[in-house]
Structures are given as C-alpha cells and as structure tokens.
Image 1 (cartoon, helix red, strand yellow):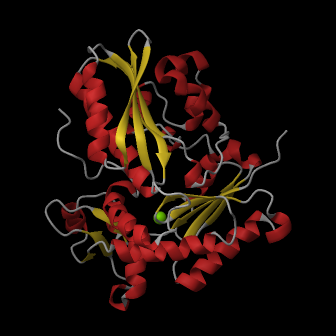
Image 2: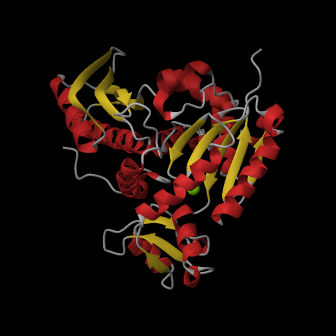
Image 3: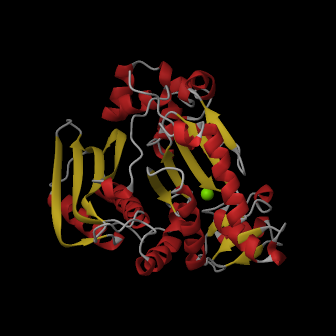
Length: 383
Ligand SMILES: [Mg+2]
C-alpha cells in the first residue's frame, strides 16, 4: 500500500476582478466585469458582486451588461495579473517543491511527506491562504484531498476564501450526488448523451455495468469509473516534466460528417494550444488519433521544423493529417502535442522576466477562453 498522498489545489477567487478591486478603491463592493466592452467582447471574470445578477466568466459582454447594467467594465490588464501571479507562485514555492501550475491563478501542490517540516496538510493550507491574504491582499480557495481530481473538486466547493477537505472517508458521501460533468474528461456533449440514458450523477454512472460504459465511453470508461470512486493516481507534475498534452473525444455514435470531426479537432487543437502557452511549453510534434467505427485505431504524427505553441500552426498540422485519411465514420478523435520543451533549459513558468511578459500577454488572451471554460472565443468555421 503506497503512502497516502496529500494534494492541495489552490485557486484565486475572481482573480482579475479581485486584483482590479484591490488596486482601485472606486471598484470595491461594486459589480465589476473584466473584459473587452465591445460587440464581440467576453467576460473574463465577474466580481462576486456581479454574480448574483447572473454574470459569469465566458459570457458575452453584451449579455452580462443586459443582466447588470450598472456593472463597471474594466479591460483585461494581462501584464498586471501576470505580476500578481508571479507573487502568488513565489509564495507557493515556499510550501512545496512540487507545484503544477494549471493557469495564471491556479495550481496543484503535492504536500505528501511535508508534515514533519511544515505541520499537517490542513495547517499548511491555512498558512498558505493567510500568506496570500496578508501579502497580496487577495483571497484564494483551497481544496485538500488524496488526489488531484478530488482536490480540484474541493477547492471549488466553498468559494470564495474557502478551504474544503475531502478525505477518503468522505468520498462515498460527496461524489455520488454530483453531476457527471464534474468527472474530468466528461464534457457537455458527453454529459448530454449520458443524460439521455438517465445517467446524470456520478452515482448513476457508477451503477452502470462496466460493459455498458465501455460500449458508450470507449476505453475511457475505466478512467471515469476510477474518478467516480475518487481514484486518480496522476502525480503533480511540474511543467518541465510534462511529456505530452492532449485531448480525446469518444463519440457515442459513429460520426460520418467530416466537418463535424474537423470542428472537434479544431476545438482540441485550441485547447492544447492554450495549455501549452499556459505552461510555457512548445511542441516539436503533434499526433492525431482516429478510431474508426470498426474500432480500428490509427495514429499519425508530424514533426515541426521548429517547436511551436501557436494554435494556428497546431491546427493546420492536425487538419493536414486528418485530411490525408480517406474518410470513414469515426468513433474517436484525439489530438496530442508531443516532444514538449520549454524551449530553453531551466525555463519554468514565471522564471524568466522577459519571457514572463510575453507569456502573460498571451495568457491574458487565452484566459478569456480558458480560465473557466475554453470555448468562448473560437476560430471561425473549421471547414
Ligand atoms: Mg480562480
């Protein structure tokens, strides 16, 4: 039996809005929307005062303004948020050498085995939150659990300024009532499909026979079943150790429309691009995986002349590979960025000031898409 792990997920509360409110007293206590105030603008973050009106991130700005006309709209200041993010990560680094940044304001920390030095994981989580509050004058929510999946779930449960712990004995009580979409990898589309079979909660999914799940979810069925009982062995991975980043989607029915597949592939390329940039990584190669309706699976890959993190290049390469295949009904499509590097030895996220600036500006754009959802701003048609 391996030693129990202790994973902390830390997530700043309404980060962009909180920074603006902190720095500008005129915004405090008021509904604030961060984002571009134009016809195609999108809310990057809504302050907690704006949320009761129905405003939330990833919402078209025009909709948010209708819901809350008195809201103050503030443009995204990526550079400023990047600076504060660096300060936050500097605090985290005092608590664990094993930190995996998830986004500009969010990270996993592995606290396993730090008790002797730092005290119980709960005490560490409280100290971390206190430090962020006293030094940055901002609040963060933390989740503590035995794995990444549960830690992230926990940090979201009592926002803002929350600390939620899910211990092994809590899993049977906490997980079953949650919607299936809370399981990592189950997106809106899959959740809707499962809903048609009456599977709406994690508990519903867990009760299905394994064979049924395999038929409808493919090889991912076992992964979801593991998550449904709170099992997730993935380690906290500092950026430089990441080898590949990818997304896969299994369709419940074979899809015969090539344009539909291309749209999914484009989404995947965009998500992977965001993640690469978020982690300061570039890919030397990509791979596209297709499973046909007859379960034959093919993977094709392509190596770039120069490593890239640009969505446009990733997508162009993916599309080129996809279009080479003679088309048949498709069961699964996946996109992976491979042979990742930081482009420069020892260059970690938030480590190099010049690169940071560049990263953070990119990140600010990405965050509008990726902070809470990832489909807010999309490229035009995939066809
Ligand atoms: Mg956050």
